[in-house]
Length: 288
Image: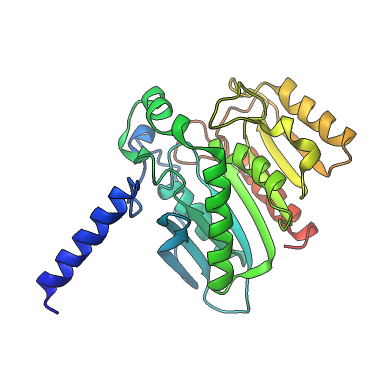
């Protein structure tokens, strides 16, 4: 087969994926357009000692791109599903995967908007929410995360030690996945929304399903987060306690939303570093 023939086959394959409803067949490079200019404080983690890069995860209706990072040496590593912010799997989420791999985890972030569109190319947040984010069904996300966990298990990760962490949009997903997957060992939700108005595609919120939690969840929240009132954090904590669930809520005073996003003005080094330490301790304490 000539290189020309190979290119034609690749184009046909990409077209087939698009016809089946996939808007993205590969990850973007760099940061999402809506996050620019990128702060000088942005952390970049190298790949020394790691295997890191893009992979394709088989799902029910095709394949979706994901970023995977894992240690080169050692036995099967615990698997951590990393769930994207509202901006999709851009450079910050990839770096989170590398940070987790540096401390011994198989970390993988699947592009969960792959069918709905490329969030990285939209600069207006309201447009991003209306055209992409609001159109992503929770059921699809749960299915794709299950497929990602299965991929990681087949790819050398330790299937018996499965955790999840997520940020912003992904923080909400952490709660839902802990309520969805009985095999999950632990979750860490960074400023994930807990209450809200239901929609046909997002019919339930974490607080509606807290009695169904299968795994301990650590919630990390900002006391000055205008989108997630502290009252809702405390309500979730109370409901979880009444249901006998292992939930710990940490609220950092005078701290905004997205305080771990080191590439944005919302970054707060103290809470971010403390949250990272708590994440590691939480995972260790619960079998990861």
